[in-house]
Image (tube, rainbow, N blue to C red; front, side, top):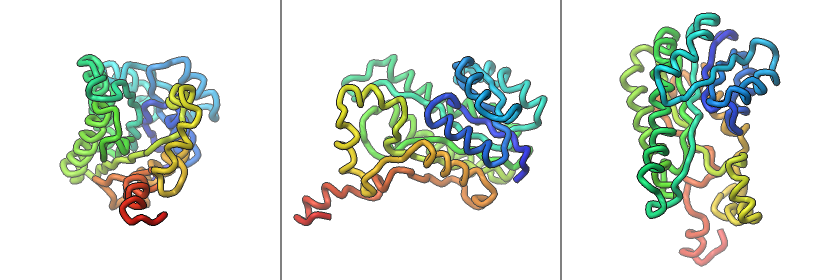
Length: 258
């Protein structure tokens, strides 16, 4: 893997995004950091050595605008060799509480955003036999609330597998990292409503703890690295064992403390 690889990371100014940027910079990549918040991107780039993080701000779901935003960095530094499609958001918490506009936005900001990210990076990935890592969610693997977000994340897995199958002949790989609960700013509102929310949730996680943004970044780094050269179409939960099974239910079924 070349030290000069240009890696596109979307949602770069968020909690997980910042950890992704730091990990890929530490690994030797030049990061093309994308977000809609230009000021936050400028602040992020200033935290790293000059030239290691190149900022590109635009609306992610506008493919033409995205391509235009990425073009100067590609012209200056060469094709995109790896991509982490990290950007996403969630609105409706239940089916009954999800209005049609909220449903559309959740699909747009998660599934369509992933589509636009890959399309914008495709020429570079094909030329470099590169790879894309989608940041999905355990919500795409089980019903855990936020149904529109969950549907989009589930569809993202199917999309990644389609990429793996159709573009594998060009050496392009596509994989999905599915975090469980991650302590980021997105959880602050819930923690403000219920300061015990994290302690209440821990009983569902076999490891008794949650992932940090750095844990997600490490999984993405591995999948984007040469060490994962034969891994494509895979789904990797980073969830403290949540998707392995339900310890609370198992304890009640067996009448033993597991």
